[in-house]
Image 1 (cartoon, rainbow, N blue to C red):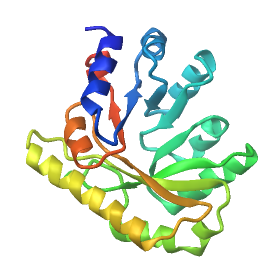
Image 2 (tube, one colour):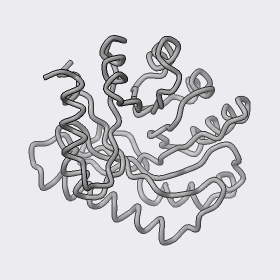
Image 3 (cartoon, rainbow, N blue to C red):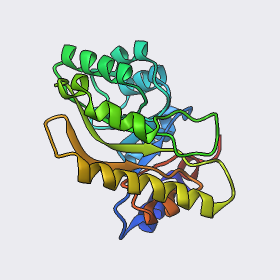
Length: 222
């Protein structure tokens, strides 16, 4: 199947859910990204800042770029002029740097708090308590150039679909609790739950994901 056919198949399978597709384009050549764009998929997720910047420079400017991989503070400045959303905020320090670089570019950058939901040591993310600490902090409340709009999580890499479902359900429950506890402000408007990848995006959509991050099911395996 072609990239366009794969995108159509995924979008059809997501019909009736709240989930929108982010095409994970990491390591993929420009031709593949252009093919996805031509199929009217214009939201791309990259893991590495440098690769995202290189692609942004040569591709159409109406693409919405999402940084979905682990982010080091010293890389924020390179994508601050254009990044649409950062999914992987896992510390107050990183959030401060995003706020600082967004101010320099006269922008407000949407961010998600990455919550640790997997039964694996290799994944990054905040505990639920750490997320509350950030949202309750005076430092966060004073930030003007970022907006926390939701949460992101990565399920355990396992064939046990029930475990994956439980992890996704736990993240959605946590998100619902945040929404109930924190009123909307200029820099806190909770509406997105980013969970689900090529192997489990349908489970994620069933459990309330609003953003699924799909790569190999569109472009083939790396």
